[in-house]
Length: 126
Image (tube, rainbow, N blue to C red; front, side, top):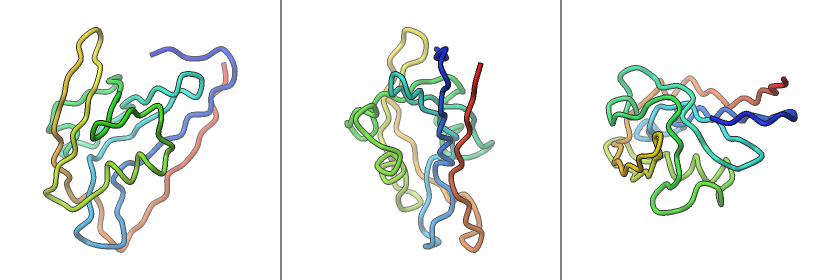
């Protein structure tokens, strides 16, 4: 993964954190975006949740979600596409090294609906 020399603002999307409705779920991955290129990478996976079960790995680049290019989407749109009813699935196109993979990830419940967490932003400098 390329790290920009300039200050890089990395938005960590706690994708799939609990929504108000108990039937909402997501893929259970922490994603980071390179603000220079707009690329979206898997930063971390929650053990046992959907993304890990589907075979995603840290460092995978998400290129498309449901046929839409990630670089054209903002954080709100990405969260909306990755979240959905528990048991429903989302189609992802990822790049791992030089290989392009298409995977279907079944959304799973993540947290107790009473505990809601928000995405956080970190600033990384060299």
